[in-house]
Image 1 (tube, rainbow, N blue to C red):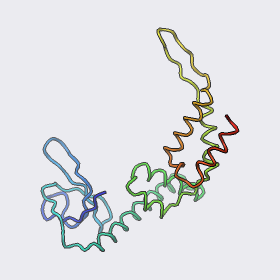
Image 2: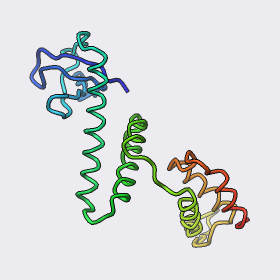
Image 3: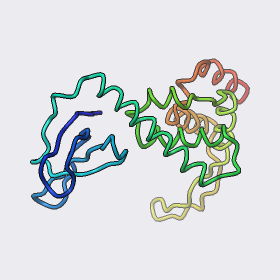
Image 4: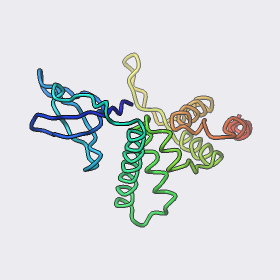
Length: 190
């Protein structure tokens, strides 16, 4: 993810020092750059033609501002999760915030893993995902002009394929001991 120090000396949207993220096109001819203002700790926008790279900022300052940005962003998401479910246990809130952050900001994966470590149980995730997949049913459809009502359970092999793909999509396959636990849990089913 580009986190380049820039300076904006003219324009009406924003003036000052910030960090550049990417270009966003508004309309046909006007392009705006999305910037992070480290002083106000918020996103700002400026016309691309007014944004100039700032070579005077030392790399140590860039690294410190990157850490401040990621911790501020992660804390904001954690606060939002806490405001939505104030009575939920801390572990559940951290897991929820982690899932939101990984889905919408995969580029922050390293910082997220440090701040919100993965506390999921491999066996529990596998068992609950297989149960979820076993509850899936076929959908009603029309094949060759004939109506098929659906509502039938999927074959066991298809259930396991669906469960495995769901676990990979959620990143459970990267947890230690996943392959061994998957073989143990599915050996009794097949």
